[in-house]
Image 1 (cartoon, rainbow, N blue to C red):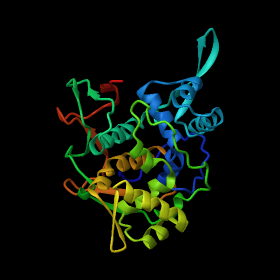
Image 2 (image 1 turned 135 degrees about the vertical axis):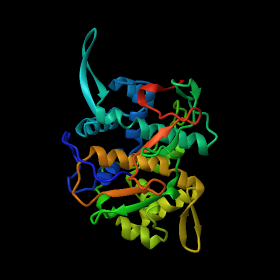
Image 3 (image 1 turned 90 degrees about the vertical axis):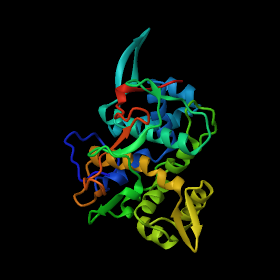
Image 4 (image 1 turned 30 degrees about the horizontal axis):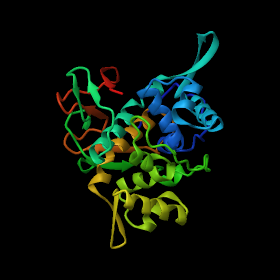
Length: 306
């Protein structure tokens, strides 16, 4: 994760400014419907209310509330277009477009750690179906969670992600969506799941450690830990919940989530996390590299085959 970042273009927000950038990101993105809406926008270029409703089978009230939030956070914007009569469509802003690397990282992890058929990701520069891998933006060396050291700002406590519950935890009833990544959605599909994983990356091991870090209700924490063990993300032994290799590999997704949050969302000074890459000593700016040619993957130079 990179160090402190600032932004001058602040979109209207519905989350309190006292939250850390990561806390705000969890509040915005820790919802399966939000992730699926963004996924369809990138994968299938869905831009209309009816398009998302028909593609996802989502209720109109739920869809309307999620689109309203994405507009409020500056991830989507509306634009008029003509289709017999003037209508509005939803387009990704620069802030929204910057989430492409997070969604590609999710796709890459799901391809690496499950046997589900997912759409190939083609790197237009070399023309190959690629497995994107995480690298340090400074030295371009491939890396994992073990290659980093994390330093917290004095206010970087994960209890600061504890917002009032915004939505009931939703479960997509269909699993046949093109490119659907169910294991990833299980990990990222609500803010507490993502927070538990974040705390694990920062060294939490015992039930009490997670509870102290997060200020989470014991029943909620018990449920999330159980689900992570079932998913093979955590391994329980001697009262400790340790990240498995599968769980450690999810650092790729986590790095882009935090990088986006600290670059795009304003937050109190001292609430940041700084991840340093051991090899080069630089604060981590994560990038995705092509497994075939080693080139950096850019949003305009990759596409999915659907």
